Amino acid sequence: MRTAIEILSSLPSVVVGLFGFLLLVVKFKFGFSILSGAIALTLFNLPLLTRSIETSLAQIPNLQREAGAALGLSRWETVMHVILPAAVPSIVTGVVLSAGRVFGEAAALIYTAGQSAPALDFTDWNPFNISSPLNAMRPAETLAVHIWKINSEGIMPDVNAVSAGASAVLIIVVLIFNFSARKLGQKLYNKLTSAN
Image 1 (cartoon, helix red, strand yellow):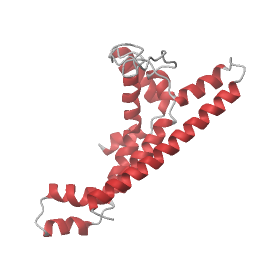
Image 2 (cartoon, rainbow, N blue to C red):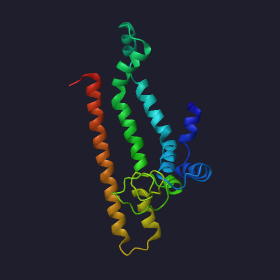
Image 3 (cartoon, one colour):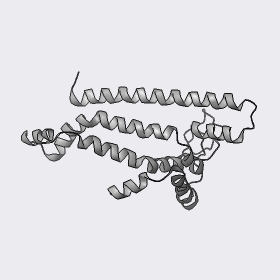
Image 4 (cartoon, rainbow, N blue to C red):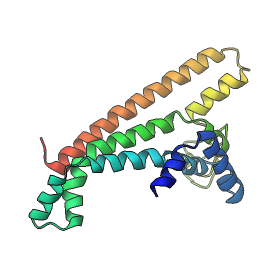
């Protein structure tokens, strides 16, 4: 399992995108869709997330495991009530790092989610309509793909301003996500460990 994860972590995002295109878009006929992009990005981030969670669980001292056994807890109860609560800050850090990688990813999404999005109607709550924001099978364009597309096509007169504005929005969204995840992780840690 570890060898497979190491091999997967060495793949460039373009290769993961092409694999997602061949498997999800062509073979399974999902088309260019949010679902195809989400599955491809999950495969792309799985090694980083797995390694960070494994490391955070391994950093918990064996004394805590032994203390759980000494108190008469089963292995499962020790993991759920002692090990996981102590590892929550490190796990949240790993999730934030892998999610930050998703925000900036463009290559894998170009091949799976598409390069443009249909006009959305936010009053349409039918998840089967192409214009509904709830439709996971519609094509989508992330900010990173939008920035790449604007810079590569260059047909707009104010291409630099649009690209700079989209980049600023992307940076602000990543910062808000990181701070929110830290806050949530701290609250979760305090609740699970009864710390003040």
